[in-house]
Length: 214
Image (cartoon, rainbow, N blue to C red; front, side, top):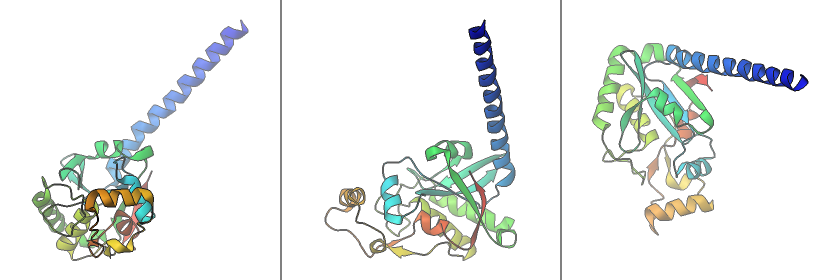
């Protein structure tokens, strides 16, 4: 009898926990949809092969970012991956390491990100769609990486520079993981003077304010 009561109690506890877990999931997704806006920048720790190297080189948790745009009743993330594309927000979130992400917004978004400016940002994004991901982090439009895509769209649509441009030499390249990535990409000719914008530099910009951190 005691075992039966214990089993019933355990089942009840599991059912209770499952109920609140499901309720949390159901409430999280609409909350994101209700809060995010066109032009918001979303950050995550990518699960890609190079993610750890980026984290070590920039001393930051965040290795990937993109711009949120609304299309009808759905939310998408314009991101510099292979190739550059619009990814449904829920799929972008599903790729976040440990499920963690942060959404940030321009502090004066209500006055800067007008419908006309958002439309311009989307058109600039259309020009980048389909382009290859830039593994060499070159400062050209031929290929493009995630934070470069975000920085250039904001610069060209609003004139605002979000994040400080750096050179490859400014990053911490001492880790063995980072060194292996550098050799794999550049061999013995590492372009130390190449202009680079990192996800962490955009993340730390004082021009942004945090909207969601989950």
